Each structure stands twice: as C-alpha cells, then as structure tokens.
Amino acid sequence: MTPAPLREALAGISGILVTPFDADDRIAPARLRPILDRALTAGLHVPVVNGNTGEFYALAVDEAEAMIGEVCALVDGRAPVLAGVGRSVKEACRLAAAARREGAAGLMIHQPPDPFASPRGVTDYVRRVAEAADGLPIMLYLRNDAIGTAAIAALCAVPGVVGVKWATPNPMKLAEAIAACDPAILWVGGLAEVWAPALYAVGARGFTSGLINVWPERSLAILAALDGGDYAGARVLIADMAPFEAVRAMELNGTNVTGVKAALAAMGTDCGPTRPPASWPLTAEQQAVLERFLKANRLIHA
Image (cartoon, rainbow, N blue to C red; front, side, top):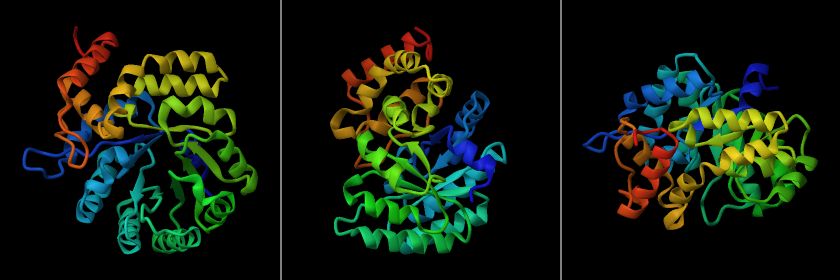
C-alpha cells in the first residue's frame, strides 16, 4: 500500500527535472537549485530525477546514480522525490538500490526500449527491480501500450507497483487498462499538460511536466482547473503553451529537452546544452519562436 502522502503527491504534478551540464560536459546538479526552489514554492508535488526531460539515456549510470543523491539533497525533504531507473536490468537494480539509500520516496521504472523485449520478460524485469528496491513504491512509465492490456495488468500486479505514468496518446487503451487492474493502482497522465485533459476524462489523475522547469505556476494552474472539473479553463491555459510545445516537438521530438534548456538559458538559469542524440542548439527560427513565447508570457523582458 502506498503511504497516503506519497499517493496524494503522485496524483499531482510529477516535475521531470532537467540534468544540468557544465562547460566540460560534467553533470552540474547545483544549477537545479533555483529551478527546484521556484517549482516547490509554486506547489510542485513530486520532483522526478532521471526522467526523459533529464536526458536519462544520455547519462552514464554513474551520473544517473549521482543525480539521485544530489536531487534528494537539494529537495531536502520538501517533497517526495521519484527516481527514474532503467536500461539493463543490472543497471536498473543498481539505481533502485541507490534510490533507497539516498532517500528517494519511490521509483519510476522506464519501459525497457530493447527491441526484443517481450511482455513477460518486462514483467520479470520489473520484478527484479522491485526486489532491489526493497519496499520502495514503484511507478511504471509506460510509453508503448502495444504490449496489450493483459500484459499491463500483469505488470501492475507485481508487488510494489502502485501506479502507472501513462505516456501513450490512446485514452481508450488507458480506460481498458484501468478497468483490468486493481482499483488501487494510480494512473497518471504521462504526456504532460497537452494530453492531460483527454487522459483525465477516462480516469487519470495528475500529470508529468517538463514545463515545471520553466513555468511551474502555469502547470499548477492547469492542474487546479482539471481537478476542479474546469476542462474549458484548462484548455485555455494549455493553448497559451502551444508555441513552446511546438518547438519541443520539432525534429522528431529531438528538440524536446533542447527547448526547455534554451528557455532556461534565456531566463538566466543556464543548465548547459543537451547531449547528442538530442539537437543542440535550437535553430535561429526555433529560438525566435521560443523567445516570442517567453516574452509574451513575461518569462523574460520584452
């Protein structure tokens, strides 16, 4: 059973933090301090380290392990930290053990991107990581629902799994999965603000957010609208984000994190570049769209 405060937090916003790098391409976690302070002051419920906005697959396992400890220290008990783990099963287990040791409140297990992953093999993978977590609550990060509803139900039945971050644009499949699983499982919108209304409509609660790094107040306003049943108000708030999300979706989503880091740099919080294979920097045209968005919303001076 998930502790009540953690379950309540997971139904809020999971803020996927960037991973800052310095000029020598080393992780620079101290640069997260102003981002975390602003987001937590705004009301961020769950800071998430080693998510996709944190360039998880561009990090060495030593770096991912270090980021867990650094983020837990920076948050310093102000909110429950969710630690992303994944890649090979041994690396995932190593990161799970580190998350427990460093004081994370739970794990977010990335869905294995292995081209030969089988549904029952993924279940075995999650079971191994759960054992290494030694009691930490687990959120599954589901980016591919082609494994089928029965496989999703099997994953949710692994001891320790308390919820799913649903990151596929398929609300009807989400509705099927909710119906097939234990009612205690928490379903969180894993496609950020833009998809939150559609996923809320079939039973998701809360959502993940990369915008939280840049404009946490807007993310919290969208959550408040959805929790209050004001879908029209939420859509208006989301519409203002369209230019930012359009930049992030360019180049096959290869500018997703690039847009966030470029916005932070323009706002005076330099978190360094993205690592390949993400794009860096934005093109002149992309940067112009981003800066118009930031100025229009008074995130930087006109």
